[in-house]
Amino acid sequence: MTFWFSILGLLPFYLSTMAWYNDFIHDAILEIYGPPARLFGTYAIVVFGFLGGGYWAVVSRDQSERKTHYMMAIWPAFWIFFFFAFRGGLRPIIIPTGFALLLINDWYFVKQGLFPSWWMRNRIFVTLAILACYLVPIFDYQIQTILERIGGL
Figure 1 (tube, helix red, strand yellow):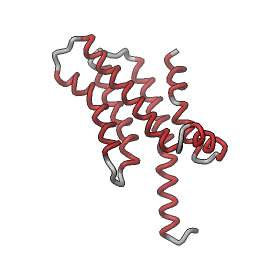
Figure 2 (cartoon, helix red, strand yellow; figure 1 turned 45 degrees about the vertical axis):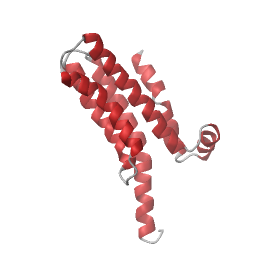
Figure 3 (cartoon, helix red, strand yellow; figure 1 turned 135 degrees about the horizontal axis):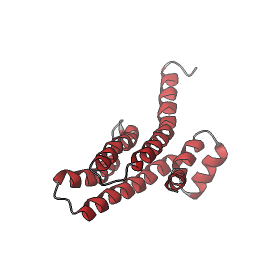
């Protein structure tokens, strides 16, 4: 059941990615929500908040005395906050990097016995799907930049 909820939760990432190459989807998202790139960022905030809240809930329920548990629970909120505060050229890779780093959190919480063992299988699948979605605009931008530099082949 968790797998199907994960697939459903990936839908905004899939739609944003498909909008990159499909004018109908692009125009529909643009009309309903705004630029598809904004959907990528906004939904990432939701996911980071959801996961951070889950980490915090587990640590609080466990009534842990370990500072590391609490640090691991709150860093996703800081990561996403600084993503939106950052205006440099690395901005497009900060969110995908954060998703990759969340796997460290998941592994940590599983190893501490705070999450069930099946959690990692689910999170690895979801993370790979999200990273694949983010690679489309990143590589597309890089290819366009290269083509512009060599004269628009």
